[in-house]
Length: 97
Ligand code: FES
Image (cartoon, rainbow, N blue to C red; front, side, top):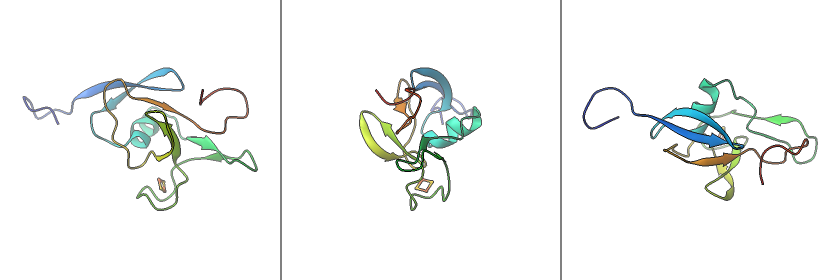
């Protein structure tokens, strides 16, 4: 929440280089979900899409590269202005650098 109002503070962050809106402090996965991004990465073996499963930090299905560190749990990591996140194990060349 913003200290000067009761309204949430809307910020901009980046996923795979594209800008997305978020609410400061909410989990990265929630911000992406609200914008229609439900695939947070791809299975390293099968290539199947991965996304939110437990949403409480237990399953690691939401792992993304966040702040330059691989395998961060997007369901727990707080979004902030300018944050850069990348989807991992991208079969088409999109996503992580
Ligand atoms: S969705 Fe299970 S750890 Fe994030």
